Length: 469
Picture 1 (tube, one colour):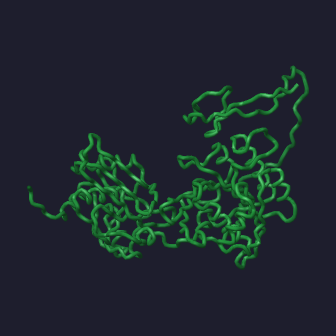
Picture 2 (picture 1 turned 180 degrees about the vertical axis):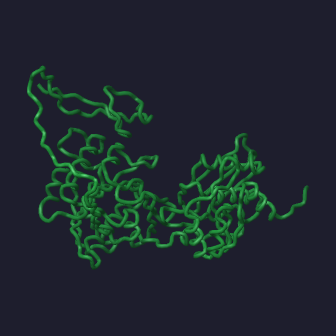
Picture 3 (picture 1 turned 135 degrees about the vertical axis):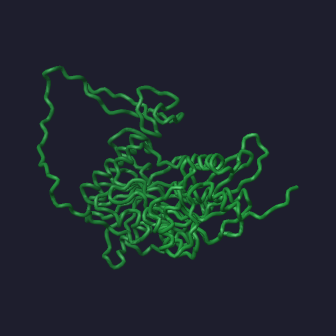
């Protein structure tokens, strides 16, 4: 006779335990383990009992077969197509996460309207399923964005079986948006919506439909306080692409970043600006991030960075002030705090810059987040500039990686960085000595830096002389 059992599952990471405990041993979260009903387990069968059902043989293929490019459905939004790799692949499942109110629903309703209209390519059947808002609320948003005339099919439903039956009727849809996966539930499991078991089962059913019908499905996911997509990590492994929609409530632009993509690059980003008519593409993000720069103030440096294949220039700000505390403060926004601690240590050990009695504040202007170590040289220059109260030349762009020995190392894609800097009117570059020739070919002035001490001497040499009191 079947026996009903229960499991205790961590709602943060999906770890399964036999009994409840206060702290999850896998992810370290407290009070995240909840009891969920398990599946019915059959009684043990004695040896010599019924045999397992015989499987069906399937054909095997070789590696020398013709490789077919996956057909894509272009979203009609250039920045979204850039991140996805050229459009939505047929039968793919994409998970998009972001903080509440960041603009996920706005972006997806715009993408659904653009795909349904076709813009001369022929419209496709697009379905928008909302589990958090009513159909009237979604319709109001569409009217505010000027998309009320788009032939997008809309419904407010949370039952997975009903959704799949509706999608299977009529012409198979090309694009399906589920907002959000945490609100979906299926009758196959006995658990509350939003739990690990329900999220996993609901996602599994939607993924099976996508692979069988060829429809591209976009799942919207909530994020935790740490910025991670809520729910079990296994859902991220099940889908084909995972994207993060980032932004700051105090700034008007948003960044769509690919974390995982089986059909494209994972280092591309799309930049959008939030306006009255929804999200607008930003074709030149560098001009946006450098729009209100005060070049005459010390402690600022322009970093020539790369995001995938796109060069971007952003302003790095630093403030070094004497501290009144026993332990100086180290505050950083938009960069890795451990990386800042390493740059400070190299400046003190290899450059002779004493920062032990100073508070250090660092910020990436515009709320942008830098991930590459090529920003080491720009950060170090901003710190020394603030300490010496000497502005860096306003038309100078910087990039380079600093090693623990104090050596400034070259970084990849230097030509693309220099070309973007020249396009925006910069005339001078402060960069590793190994990239000096590329800067000369781009028509820019060069200040090569071989070691971190050379950078300190370059900035400190331009400092105004002050009378000693």
